[in-house]
Image (cartoon, rainbow, N blue to C red):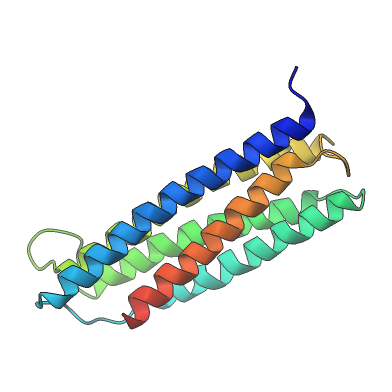
Length: 184
């Protein structure tokens, strides 16, 4: 059986490798965005308020996960913070979809007649981020279930720690993407 210290170290390393890959994906997408924008024919439009709401929700979600890690390290139940983070993650997803609906109602389309590369990039970048966030929601759901069953202790909270790291990553990635698309 694998030593828990080795398991923790291996799990964290694998998470960091995965996040490095995701970072490279978004570096490629944002580079393509810059190159394509320089070619011209770039539609200017306002970002829907729903994207601001999603930004606030993911920042608070990340904070709740950080608190859950502190709470479990102090020997208390992190369940309320994990469930709160889960709901905020779901709200992030909802607000992304509402943001897309607002874009469509404003005439900003992903593809087809009337579409523009600016809108297409926005849809692709936000969708790819949302897909990574859905993976985080699945992991956070499993972690929340385990926490309600008392599986985490002040000595063994790897699931909470990995979720916290990943959601901090998603948070920082979203902030980068959001402000990149707002101001670049």
